[in-house]
Image (tube, rainbow over all chains, first blue to last red; front, side, top):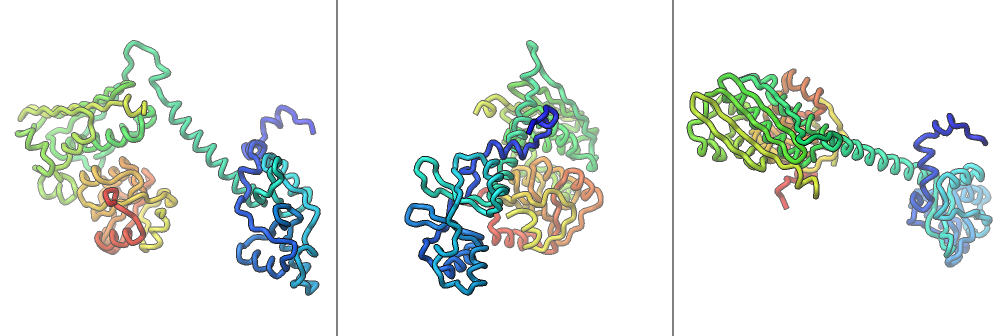
Length: 314
Length: 115
């Protein structure tokens, strides 16, 4: 068959996989075998117990045939279930070799109409497995899954924006405004910020810390400020600096506010599960560096720094 | 153990459906959002009495496998809408938090801090 370039292009991913995969990679290695002198009744039991449709016949180390459910039915019809396997098996078995491509195994399965092939090691000639159509399907799906995952990871890496941009000093500035007491949109800035950093290829473990810290800071703006505030992030290749500013009321005692469990939140806020007094200490635990300054009547200024390099290089 | 299996075993109502085949890698229970933020991890199921929209924000930010709202609390429209948008598995149980956690533990779901 002549394959035109157009047809070549339309060869599917599955076909490509079938041409790459080898029999040894997809076969079942845990093979149940029978001996030529075993009875067909024994075969019947084996097929039932192991839910298989056929098994190789081995004389010692040597493959001498294959006996399938079809052979068993013939023996049953003839009332010869007590006879030895040697009488009913298919003796002329064309084996597969573990280093053969799956595509050639499929052709053999189609050409012969057999449901299964014993698989031999080409150099030693020993039985190393059995291949059924089910094995081919399972193996192909597994490879598709692996390919898909690798592509996903590849995409993740390719989004390293900073590697594609050349300048003396590259930074991305992201800014979000947060309204006070706006519970409807609370958490939205952190969500958008997290997604943006994800698209920039920030490592998942750092991303989690940034998301937690930003969320807490955002909730502080929603819960405690007079007029809301802003979250501004300066994203660079080696670090992210986040500044959260508001215009008041300010924190009377910063050290006290930092203590886990200290809260000034009113009862109705606590009932919603906010105001546990863990926000600032959560931020401290998540950020690589944190400074908090506040002046009563003026406002609060939170700075957080997250280092990107160290976890990237691990 | 995936979300679908937990829904079946605990006879939970599915309020909003995300990826039900998601594997549950652990669990966390608290009604305080900051505690959940600090304690729950990606792939965890979070058991809580809270049912307002910010529960979904927390679940989404932490990439949780599912949220189980207890004592038959009905999440409001806004919460359900947000859960659908963020593709969060939002589940509901008539049982209380302790009972739900006990059942999860019996199924082998563990805290991130237990041996």
